[in-house]
Length: 165
Image (tube, rainbow, N blue to C red; front, top):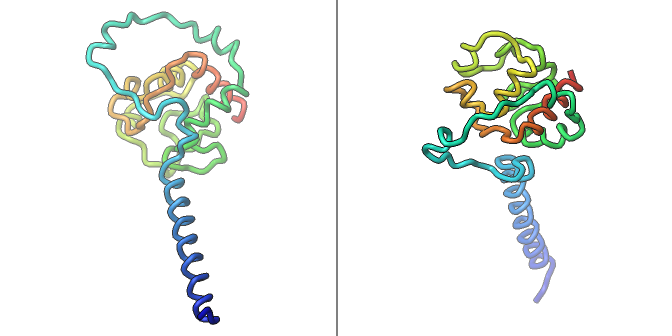
């Protein structure tokens, strides 16, 4: 009843199903990194919400003085889905040496027209504004990230990026 061929067929069937499961899991992890998105993965914009909230004055220099690069490295996990700090480009350009670097200056990376039209360099103030709302800072950018709403998180990420310059 159970000869060698039957056992071989059963084993190959189970191993083949296991291989398909592992390949599907690997492909899904490559497409979507749940732990890299933090507390929320998307933001729903509400019409009129921007006009209702008064703009508060933020002292960037004071925030940067209190910034913690270690906390910034954990907040940077949200950015690491697209950006790398090892000198190679991912979906977004690498962020090695970004503080003080000219805007849209990584050679070989295809920036959107919105970033190509910006002039100057990435100062702490410019990064603070961009990280708060990329689409608000550079309308038309292809960066799909909604931004870091907490000013302390933005300052910590900038301190982290400065520490790896």
